Image (tube, rainbow, N blue to C red; front, side, top):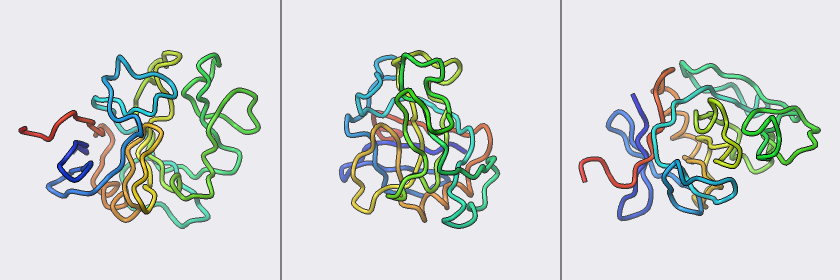
Length: 175
């Protein structure tokens, strides 16, 4: 069952199994996937299969899910440098090219679902590190990811199965 992400009159909504949750998207709004560029802050429109769950083991056990769940450490990162052969791939820190740290103090990556955006194979500059992760309390926009409050994300993880996807839409279903 896919997680649908779409705009409403009040902001952004994620829906799965008839349940709706408030969510945040990128500060650059949404953008067609073929127009997505590294650093534009946009969330790419399209269907992005879920790959796996990464989690911080010091913040508790992972929620019940059928997705493969892998603990992260302080040495885990994700390359966002289009010039690197490791672009849009997990990396081990320290790492010389530009990257994101997955072990963050703000809690947004405590639960991190890797999405199949620009990964098979990665096209340099077409966007990296597009995840489904925990939202900030104020639903501040992301760098291009989709974010839900942790309890909502835990509920969604209980419904997602391998092969399901996050589907980012320009309008509400049936609109």
